[in-house]
Length: 302
Image 1: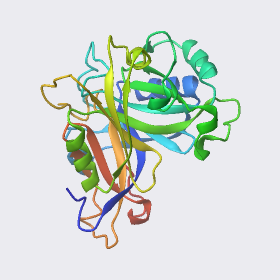
Image 2 (image 1 turned 90 degrees about the vertical axis):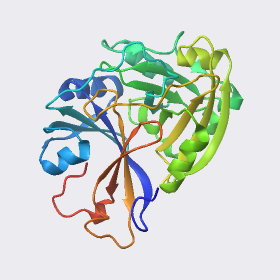
Image 3 (image 1 turned 135 degrees about the vertical axis):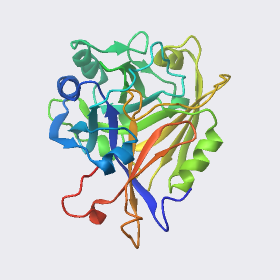
Image 4 (image 1 turned 45 degrees about the horizontal axis):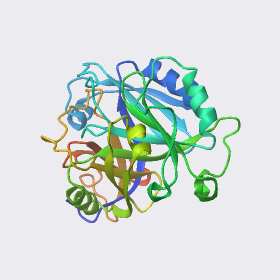
């Protein structure tokens, strides 16, 4: 699948979450992780309804951490709540990983908050060297969206994450991880958009099981990256698990997280630069939008 003509994805520009209360969720992210509020606006009209395939408009609150942005959408017509008893191995699982330079401090700060709940058992888990040697902790925000705190080994911290964010241990968002049923099929889909596989690992063992909150965990992890490699996407394929089908959610459902991908067209037209809503083979929502240089003055970014 090509984006349009000669257009290709250049970067994962923003993350989108559906929420029942955008102001309340923004306040949680500000207190728990040090996000800052960037903008609040009303989104509506025929173009927005077509893009989201949902009647009515939405309140949008944009929050930022480091260089990364999350767009919280509270729809006029709410959809379904996050599915109860959902697990880390389900296809609807989609988290983004918040990089921290001190996971103990970040975990203690989160622990002082109310409204969230753990996915991982026994606190942050340090994975084996074969799985990257990172220390991580998975949990859900007050709406049920999965999140992860992620700390790199001291001598393997990417240059992007070496600068301390004042007294805040949370630095930015490294990637979004999504559940897939077939890695090869998912990689082929994203490669047609212009991304490429950049790393692979098979994560197993008790540490991974505790991180995922599962009795046993065997997950094939494939990193796929656009030309601007951070943030990137990670495909999580849990082995020996049979999935009945892909995710079936609408944009106003709480579980319908969105990856907002910027495409650069060397010869843009009004049609090729249009925003498009796409779902991947497992039902995860993507929004493909033109790069800022292609937007008309005053155009809505989402």
